[in-house]
View (cartoon, rainbow, N blue to C red):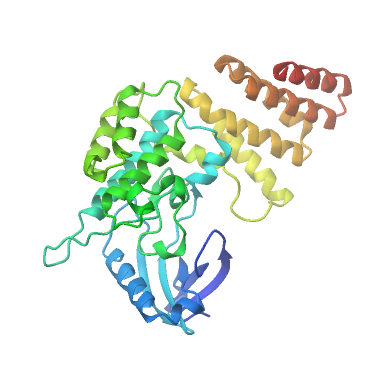
Length: 364
């Protein structure tokens, strides 16, 4: 036990101290999953740092917003200073981007609108006496934006910025110079996140302009979080159709699992879940195809791993049709190769050879 919490497993990706998935245990069988962030032993000897950690967490604990992971508790247990935050099951945006080389721009803007709303709320938060708290995230990056299986978007890290080093790509110029920062540094970071998410092709000029204004080198010329949110909302209205929460949820199906490699049983369950998702996507727009292709890729790789040759080969044929329709030769080559491997598993050797040869033509 760690105070009133039972530590379950250690979480990766923390630069300072450590983090654990934990369970708050109460009376009559009450349980709640949380994340425990612990300051390391050496920093604990720095009373100034501990005071700063406590103050940051106390201020962030006043935040109550649908798109912000809440600070639930802070204190000292077993000789360690800790902060307990809401546990958000899902996949960080950086893991999603590890599968998708890009996001269709309405999906990226939908995510950014939610994040900008969270920043706008945090930046405008006041004390009971009406004074601005001047809360700044300071570590915003794709790793601090979580997509859930229900299509929700959550910003994590408010109250625990000390746990990570800042990522250069998302660090504002003034922060890089070691100068004091305010909420405009978060706006710069969100602009950089958007730039990372979208490709140049097909992106509206209005979106490019918003990204440029969010990332202006001089903070006084940058948009506020409120202005960025409103501008992005207007751009989103120009999309061919609204972005449904289900489409954000589908991005998480293609993301890598957060735990160790799945067992054979869990591989079968994941295959079935991806197949159900793909079967439910009856209206196939170009935007939906961009979401479906990585799902088909993961489905094919899992079928190879599960030795599900016949089952996976049929799915790769449909995936190839979608890739051809969008002109994505990279995916077409991939699906031909996966179909060839799956046909080999099904002992259809001649057909397998034909598909593997076809895959080579796309690369050549």
